Length: 264
Image (cartoon, rainbow, N blue to C red; front, side, top):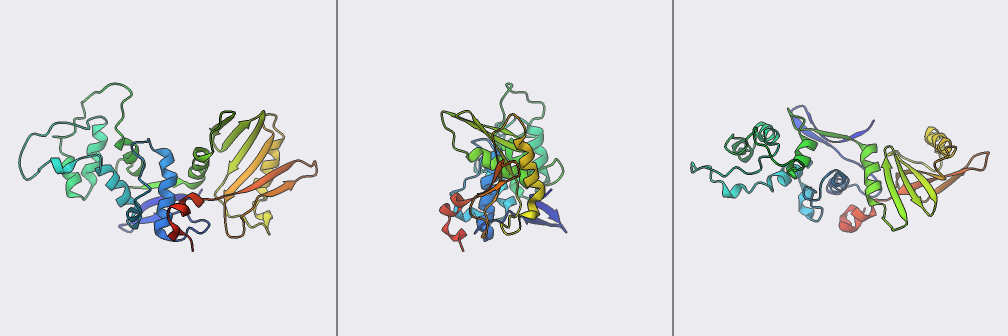
């Protein structure tokens, strides 16, 4: 199982980023990662993909900067003792643990009980946007975010499939189903390299694809992989029963359009 994100390694934070077709620069890879991660976040907590300069910084910085943007620290003047109104109280124990472990002066200051009350109760169903972000990068003890790349890839494809009136799209991991005009198509996304000249490398995936077609609940089966320099077009395969599956390249061209420097 391949994972991406960041983790502590020899007292340093090491980034493991996705690499695919023409997305080679580290700033572009971070943008691509954040684009995919946004699928896990609420609308309020999603990362801003339009600030190009942000991606010159590490993933950890990008996430922590977003988290701090919800806390208007400039209103709190720690050099002057004063009573601060208690805000951002929901899930405040998690807030406190997260800020307390940080080396940032601002975060340590925010960890004081003055601001977070673990006994506070609020209306059922409310969740502060910061919770999404903290739970992604903080395991309760240290900062780390290592996520299954196949799962992220599948969710990204699912979120970006165009919704239409006569089309229903559902995610039943590891599959995506598209039901349109009485035809059900099953997508099997996997983050693996495809060499059209040596498809034997993907024999297990191909055989699984043909097995899927034997099930009564689907009509078509597509295997979806990231687009590469030598894998740019659909490939149609047929078995002895003349059943066919398609191998489809998935492009992150929408990231390239936002930042032309991603192209080399």
